[in-house]
Image (tube, rainbow, N blue to C red; front, side, top):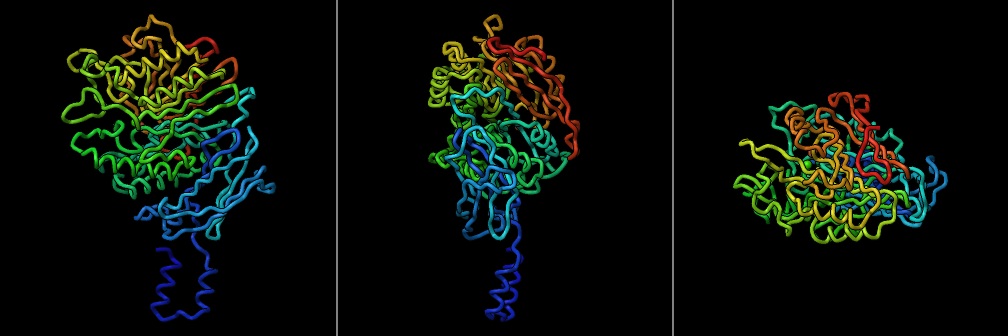
Length: 517
Ligand code: FE
Ligand code: CA
């Protein structure tokens, strides 16, 4: 209950309900509902979605941010940062059933330019956000700058990496998953800061998670200044889930379906997404975004439509090392993306005309030969090594469509990777058809460096690997070349960490494979 209501009820209890009191109460300042900042995303050449969520008490235990009945809000969009030249304005209702989130879809704007926007509600104004439309489809922009993030476990550290992403002067920000983490570290494990709430398993829990993450000042500023594209990985729902299958085989599919739907709803309430993306109990995230004729971003959903994980045990369907020939792993009938998304992706490759093609998704795509405890070759089931048939179809599709300059982007692995993707992914003698870049994590713990570094000799497709540093990818793309800067932060335990560059790689147009810049 907010202060003014508590006071009102207290006074009513004393019998003070005279008319003068009602008038007085209406003028009483209400708490700021814009504690979660603003965001923009889902851009086209004609518009984008602006977002806020009203939450005067962002971590309220009921997940509703301290509000209970509908609130009318105003929004305005202008040509200038001071909002003097407003080009569109309107009102929108914030409703309890969508946690008082306010996604507003704008159309009829000019292509390839910035706009500034602001919300007003409950006697307060939000900060002013900046959003950009995409360039006209037929245009030839000289340059595209992207910043790419994944894996920001709140308990692992401060979001300095997000702050430095904001300062890259990029055109767009890409979030490739594990934007929130559903679970907590054990109390005995060291944490830089704590979630301070139970693990998220229902709508209230997921709403409170997103609210907590969005109270972070570095993440708020990134969203206020950069238009984003968002896909997800597993921790937006639960570690290592796959389609309808929870990693824990002892959780019923029906219980997990309810949990997944709640998680998806909370994701959509906190992401700047168009209304049509809600489809039944699912969320249609995969889509294409054109930066004129310079680049197309094929944003994929690597979680929602997965086939049942191969080689599961009694204990887990989640990520674990299995023999390369374990039953089912190579079945052509299994899919990482689902049949519809695979078909859509191939059609996109065939109809594409842009200079570059960025395939942005959640997990490691290159094969990675690992070792089982008995010394045999092992493969990790939760990444593309768990769905090799889809990878083969994707790489064949890249080659047969001759889609120009494909570069894949991924997250999940909490480490930097620069990899060659071969036409036959398993055969390094076959031609390189695409290049893979994986950013490390914003904060999340990296895997053991020595364990992975010693796999390098039998994995020549890996050009670069580093798991000991946190950071992100900054991409600078022109017609001639794509440069990927592997950015790092000095210390995730400090909110004021500085930025560094671990390495830079270049892909020349027409020549797949990364070379040191
Ligand atoms: Fe992660
Ligand atoms: Ca993950």
